[in-house]
Amino acid sequence: MSFKSPYPDVEIPNLSVYDFLFGSIAEADLDRIALIDGATGEETDYRTLVAKINAVAGALAARGLEVGDVVGLHSPNSPEFAIAFHGILRGGGTATTINALYTAADIAKQLKDSGAKALFTVSPMLAQAVSAAEQASIPADRVFVLDVAEGHTSLADLIAENAPAPEVHIDPATQVAVLPYSSGTTGNPKGVKLSHRNLVANVCQIRPRLGVDADDRVLAVLPFFHIYGLTVLLNASLYQRASLVTMARFDLPAFLTLVSEKKCTYVFVAPPVALALAKHPMVDQYDLSSVHTILSGAASLDEDLGKAVATRLGLRVLQGFGMSELSPVSHNLSADEEGVPLSSVGKPVANSENKLVDPATGAEIDVPTEGRSEPGELWVKGPNVMLGYLNNDAATAETLDADGYLHTGDVAVVDADRNVYIVDRLKELIKYKGYQVPPAELEALLLTHPKIADTAVIGVLDDEGEEVPKAFVVLQAGAELTEDEVIAFVAERVSPHKKVRRVQFIDTVPKSSAGKILRKDLRASEGTQG
Image (spheres, rainbow, N blue to C red):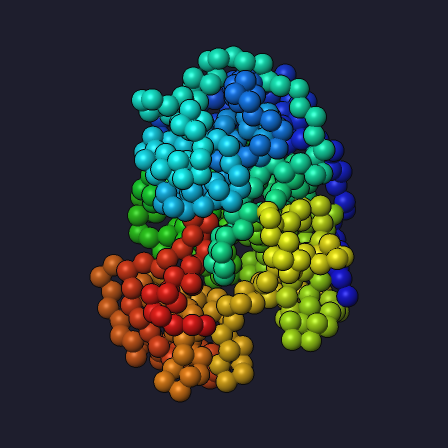
């Protein structure tokens, strides 16, 4: 049977993202600091931010941008990213956010698939952006730079034109605001159609439990081009009138320096950053006492790892769960709720409904009266569920059913209090002699070894064609460990069918910009399957 969020429904205004965030901003909030450039220290208040957003919308409209036109945004985090993104939406356009690490071929593929008519980028990435724009038939005069590059119109140039923002009339429920592309960890990236209402709804759904307020300084290191960074960091923080400190990329010394010097209070991370905060000796050299909360998302956070961070830094650690198709948050631990295990991703967000479905039989799994349920695929229904995949009805039909449930492809269990626990990705479960082996469980165990800095586990075929767990291990600096020692460490702590059967030592675990382990890359490097 389905189970609803235990939280009361929240009102979701029928507004565009711009009107929701800035349409009724109080005069007293206009002089608050909205954005701080972590690289330069330059500050942008809300009054200036809103004015620049409107100016960008006007400049794009003057160049013929129409409602529904797609504009690519290819940049690491910066205040300029926020201005360009909201300028595109304010003008009625759709922003397709592009991974800053993409090659020209990757960028071109997304531009062509999305039908983009213009592109914002930054000068360090201009070469691949220009090449991609040419491949996608985007004119050179529609490739804009957020900073400065000779021969290209800059964001400052657009703002200086001071063109009036156009009058835009859209239906927030059907107008696509942002078109991120799914990570592609289990297949080809697909354009995810998220409406203005999807984005507005998700901020409303998470706001009461997130614990961000106007006095917070939020470190924005997770990329805005990923929907996690876009909704949870950028939009939710701006709605609360907090201040965002932007970082272009993660670098541990720079990260620690910014938190310390800018007195950041709320930090959003992915598990690899949590791992560094728990284990790296450098952390002790910095004053991080200003931080009251760290929230981890984008991939499962092991409970022991989360507790290690909380204990070491003396703060609150939360985690959440979501996916691009959910705008992205469907579950999060509440900042004001005690006693929920950190191994849980929390309860379903307000205005949402869940199901757990046995992937083998299709039977629905009941919420238990005590303890935890049997595992099943997590299905989610709510106002944050995407409109569908762009130009891909088949993939949409496979993911969204007729009742409005999105089939996440993640295996979960639920307890009697409706706390949800993610077990693993349905497609990443290893089948050893018919038994299911969750890679995440073995990864969490391996990370408890003091000599192991990072790890990933996939299924590979042995000489007899049986799928077995293989661990890729990154050692701590200066540490020594043998394959047999790793195998023995796991074997002493798990059921026989969960033993690691093979080990390979590597320098780094491949991960997406959002911190998800790219198991397909490990399989590709192996020539294995699983």
